[in-house]
Image (cartoon, rainbow, N blue to C red):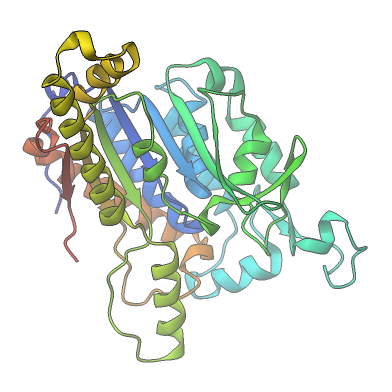
Length: 365
């Protein structure tokens, strides 16, 4: 099912100013991203920028917060820990609801309906203090903030409703920033950072692609986008399927919309730069000359999309079904999909300035 990628992709990767890895949120489905990263690392296709939301932020922080030789082992340690409870897949979701997950979250002693108003326990069903300890153990935050991989994690400001990104290019990140990105209400508690309180970024946008596209540095980018929910799917025939379909639509990526908007913006910038060129240089202000230079050299984006393909027997609890066997299946699927993707070496070719954006997807819905 999976073809080995060619050993040396360095020539194609060297054409880009950055290699980015976009990691979507999806709870237990996040183990798929481990397999994808393993295949990328084996092909020496290492990201210089990781953007993550929710479980993607956790996986991304573990990658960015460790030396290349240790990253996969630390990812495996995290997933082995949170899936360490011995339970059959059929009962895993129920056990998660009742007991939480080791090293991740556990039920509050007092129900939020009976907790003191204003307390953390009053606004969530679970406590995530164990996750804080896990992140502190698995991540070198000195390396995360000063290493060779930029990390950006998406969250939502509870007070304003604004989508925000905590970014090592702009500030120092701690375990709290990573936890904020994965604080999905009402299950998990909001996280205080500075004067603000934050929830899971997936509430507003579960895929961080737009954050990269909005970047104004005009760097050419090879982007691997790893998604855990697919937009297209069958019409539900029962309530279980309806719940699953609703979740897929809610958390799937709006990739086409984002890339079309980006391509349109590149086209407009190119036309504006061409218009300025027709004006004698002496008549242009310094600002107009700077705009012309900037817009004439806009960065292209090559987006390679991998989407986890749900199995027929999966249902609405697939994002909190943390059994070990299911985790291992997700990892294997991600590994196979990434290997098959990298076997299409022509997909790694840099788009032309006229194209602006190239789009490749392993799975065609």
